[in-house]
Length: 173
Image (tube, rainbow, N blue to C red; front, top):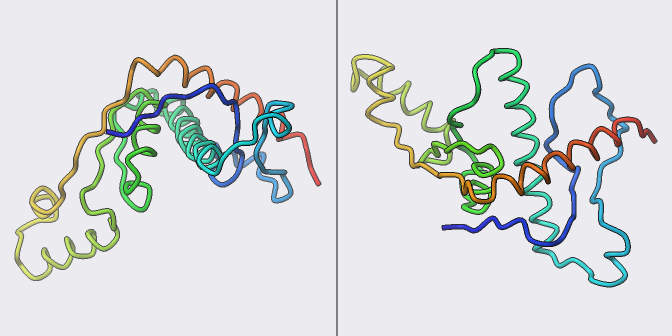
């Protein structure tokens, strides 16, 4: 099982996924990695540290988007369904589950679009009487549980990431 201990470094990434906000979309918003001063002079981060910061960015963006969905729907996220490329990384999956504090249902077939096409073809060919039955028969998932002992630490890091993200919103090139 992948470990997701937050570790002592405070490196934040703001590249790639973000919390969606149509009102504040800005193609010129700066992005990058934020380091605690004087981290680069004393203790240079390794490639793994930078990848970890990117993974955390993915997890935090997902959490922020789930929070928005909860605010609109009134229903908290109690399980997140995951497929595609991100489902191939045990570390990323565990990090997302721990950051959200909810279990993930991870598709055993990572190429979910292809599986969806196969499901539709199976129903069309008469191999299954209905779409619902084809899904029940053909879709397999596995659970990834959050590490609740680390949830508090990741909540603190997430709040700090949100603060930095809000600060970056005011910057433009």
